Amino acid sequence: MKMKKGDLIIIVILAVALISWFIINNPGTVENERQIVIETNGDLYKAITMEEGMEQQEFHIELENGKYIDIVVDENGAYVKDVVCPDKVCQKTGLINRVGQSIVCLPNRVVIYIEGQEESEIDGISF
Image 1 (tube, rainbow, N blue to C red):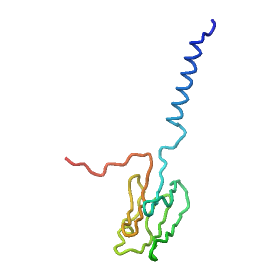
Image 2: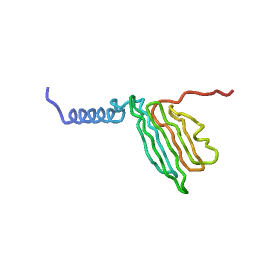
Image 3: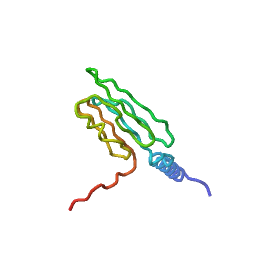
Image 4: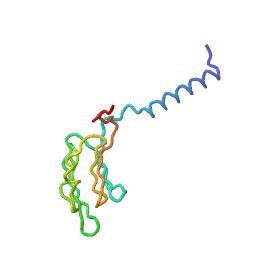
C-alpha cells in the first residue's frame, strides 16, 4: 500500500500534537517543588528552591535608615531571625514551610512567602 499526501499530513499533525502535549504537561518536572521568595519594596530580592538536605542560608538585608532584617532559610522553611522595627510581628510569625504561607514586615516593606505547585490545605470551613 502506497502512502498518499493526505496520509503524510495526518501523521505530521498527530506528531506535532503529541510533542505539544509533552511540552505542555512536561512529565519530567517535580510537582512538589517549592520556592521561598523574598521581596523588598515590591522587587524580587531572592528566590530559593527548597530541597531536601539543603544547607541553612542566612540573608542579612540592609534597609534604609540603618534598618536591617536577617532571614534564615533551610529545608524546613524560612523565618526572621532578627529585625529592626517597632513591633517585630514578622519575627514573631515564626517558621513558614507550606505553600501559601507568608511573613510580612510592613515597616520595612519586606515580604517572604512560599510558592509552589502543591495545593494548600484547608485550614477552616465556614457554614
